Length: 150
Image (cartoon, rainbow, N blue to C red; front, side, top):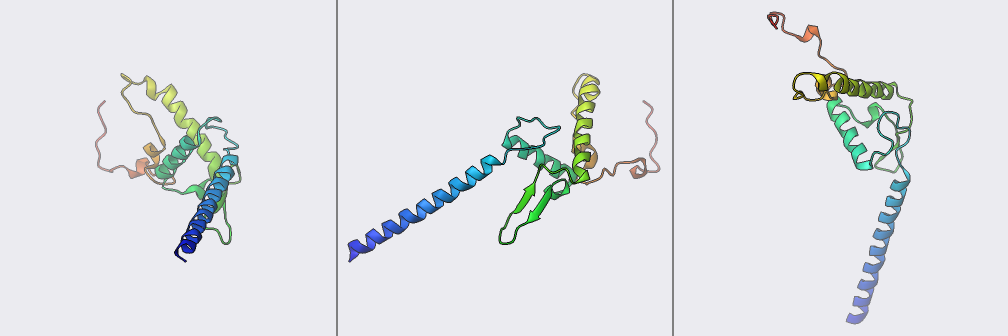
């Protein structure tokens, strides 16, 4: 009897392990097929890891989530959203592309040529500071501040 229980336990363990392996393999295969598409500003050969790092940096710099620039749908019965990252339906995505080009141009044409080169690069957070729209303006400055004499 004890031998029969052990064989059943081993068989159940093997079946469970096979199911977990098959599920993991299927998810990896599905994920491989979803290569970045419609990259117009970012390098077309960007690694998936670097792309996710860039997107997280943009998200934090602007205080927004993926849906700010990307189309997403909630699928019934699934925990995760189904994203259409290639879609250009959202105007904010095109604005983001233009801002990425602007910061690259600022860094290349101006920031890198100022002083001894010790100035840092301009990034999204330079102006956005965690806000979807930059709030830095003359109106946000102190009214009683004395102008610099430089």
